[in-house]
Length: 407
Image (cartoon, rainbow, N blue to C red; front, top):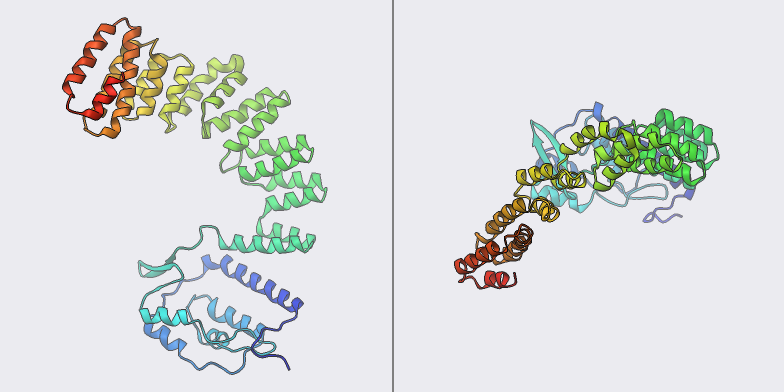
């Protein structure tokens, strides 16, 4: 006679039930948008629904799943319904599932009178109840991928491919076809169905690793026209295209990468690939960079192009960003010493004024820039006079005096 206190299901039946549970959850989450979300029951109603005697024997698993489908996952997502409550509250027999009443935590939540459990906070918004704390990732997709992983481990390839198509997992579909040496189908499907640049990059890299460079390039070029983040794809594809002597295509890829994630290195790469087209292309590339939030990079580019006055305008317009001013000042000590003197003295005095000793090392750094610029401008005597005035003015600040003495 089976032990009624243990779960004793044959492995095959447990697998079958597991697939049914995954299907049930996928169907449920896929249809949430079309269902009405009900209010959470008041504590008194919830408490009454839980106060039932524990049945002596459990129900067969199929009946439990039917009860869950009809009770807990019905169109109105009520917390407990009679049928689901009766099924889930069973003990266990040789063919049953469950070993007792609903968890004590549920009763304690009710006793607290709080609409809160397991890290999820229930909030009322415009008369409806919503739970904050859910995973950001789509639960339908999570469950689908879990099922795909099971099918893949079990070698059920036809079912795996069919589920990929049914659920829009086009990257996994193409990768599986590639694994099966069905290259033309994999590429054709990817070019037609992939919708994200990151997925295109993943497949293109796999194709290249498999020795299919032409196909990798085609998928990469298609990816540049898809949604999503494209910088990584542009950088990867740009290098691949250039290695094949396809300069125009390489430039196009690097331009995509630069517009999304600009850097000084990518600026140099775009300029090199543009060749004689650079004079015409430069204003467009500069305009895209000026819209970017990183003012330091804009200053570095102007310095790279030896556009000193443009770099100074960036620094003056963002004087509160010390890194921008420092970058420009360090580069222009010998080219625009008068500006470096003015900018450095202003920055140093703004750091000295708050009487915070933690700022004094940075102030000293700015004074060193001023000293170098004074020297390059042939005004060393003026620097010495200025330094003496500072020492006299702040002689009662020992921490600052230590910094000034080091200059």
